[in-house]
Length: 617
Image 1 (cartoon, one colour):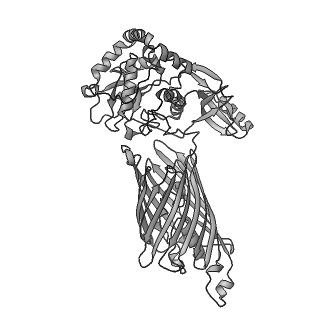
Image 2 (cartoon, rainbow, N blue to C red):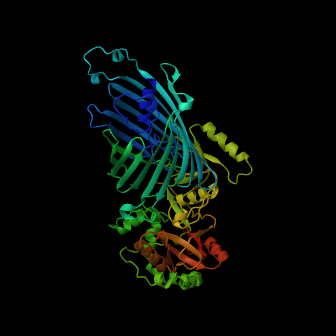
Image 3 (cartoon, rainbow, N blue to C red):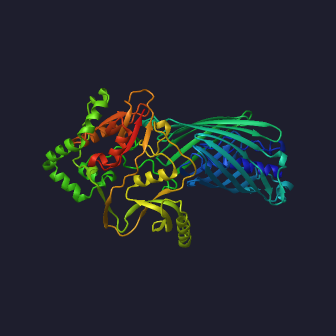
């Protein structure tokens, strides 16, 4: 009987269906399945899944009815919360109630997972589930009119179970082991439910494939597969699931389990955060099982320490939405990309631009003409002759000419801090600063600042007015490479990326002082670094390119090209054959040294905004 109780508890917490309404024999104690509700990236499937490939926290509310053809079918209600809590920590918690025959189970489960970053793209993740369940008689479901000793003398059965797991990740491939009932203890009898030799051990293999070149409804589509082999007490079981996820639409899932048969399900994303799903399973010789659920995604965790991959306004990323062009002048001034200019400077430039036209032409001839000749000579003819899209209005502002940036916020204003750690205690923050500065090998000097929004003390080594500059420093210190196509440059985007060891620093946005105060500082520029881009088709002429922007849509690339040329800076673009992105550049040479020199002197003083050096071989 004790083993029966534990079976139902484990089935519940692993998102499994009950086998039937009758008692489960001891031989069926370890009859688990790897299938799960709605989606299978849940910590109840494998404890390490609370952090693996997770960037959002999720709340799930699910109701499951097993063997619906039978009267008084078993029902399960579960509410869970899980996701990435920090850069290398995942956690989850769930409460559930299950009705099986005349019994009712009620309990909770807690999850914790910790991830170690190894060399390259390898990661080692440890995790465990710890749950408690209590079984009692559900009196309203008792149909007997006479005395039943089993029911009348039944005592509640409390059980706790410890489930550890470990997963080794090689990029998108995950391989691991899971001890599903390593510690199953009956608190009433003070005995273990199963002997050590009868424990259930499973191995899992998961792979995620992302369709990076997809667009429209299929944008950011991914295909995930999960296979599980399980050693039972007297048998061997296996299961597999495949999930196709479309963030803009929903998901579709199919799977098979040796014990529980075929299952299939689908979900619909009603909004970016809210989704509903349905799943159905058919087991041989038993009725069907279905579940309905609702999922709510809370957004990106640790947003203060990792880069936001989809900012609302960022013309660099291909997935950004087009800004509304109802009031062009207003949108330009409110756009964060144009905050490098003060309002006074913007107005002044707009009003006297026509008077400076001839002066700008002279600057082009004196400062920029030698390089522009080389650009025109090297660009493929078919791209240079392409008619430009004129649907977007052109701006007269020239923010790239400005050496300084004006910030508003008061005191230190809103800044992006290259942070080491954060503490609730001021004493601990001071101690960390002293410890860091005692190390003579550290290049930077540590300081601390109080974040009034979160009431924590942040230990940091540098601060920046622009987020992108803080991100560049973070990637430089952590030993990673930040590409030019979006926030992360992976090999499948055509940029080489290398990473070793755990992240040492991260970026935090902190606002200090009163509103309305402003200050001016020089535009920071990270050290020159040469990134390599794949050129498998040979369509891009080899050389060194000084890239100043990357666009996913032709209209925005053409708008930027015209604005540069109106300022006397000859520019052109090439198309990455693997991603379809348009790379706008203002210089192309065959000399690495010359490219670095012009990067450091801001193209002879004509372009002070962010730049990247890309080598095409």
